[in-house]
Amino acid sequence: MPDLVHVSYAQTGQSSRTNPLGMREMKEKAYQARDARFLLLKAPPASGKSRALMFIALDKLVHAPGMVYSAAVHHRASHTIDSDG
Image (cartoon, rainbow, N blue to C red; front, side, top):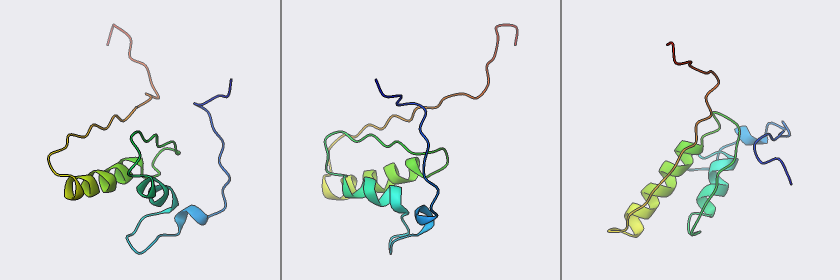
């Protein structure tokens, strides 16, 4: 079974290029898939996943008013807290 949590990415610098709307490559791909029933965004930390969801949500609010949308953002903590505080 493939490891879906740990992924390595090629670092070509292409992801820093933006389109006319100010979206980088990952956000643009997500926006192009905005009509999908389900959409999973998998990208490195601080790559703009939440901003991509914002673009998609705004598009849906404008083009499909009255619908209800849900977004879940997983956060994997980098530290642990024990019961003693």
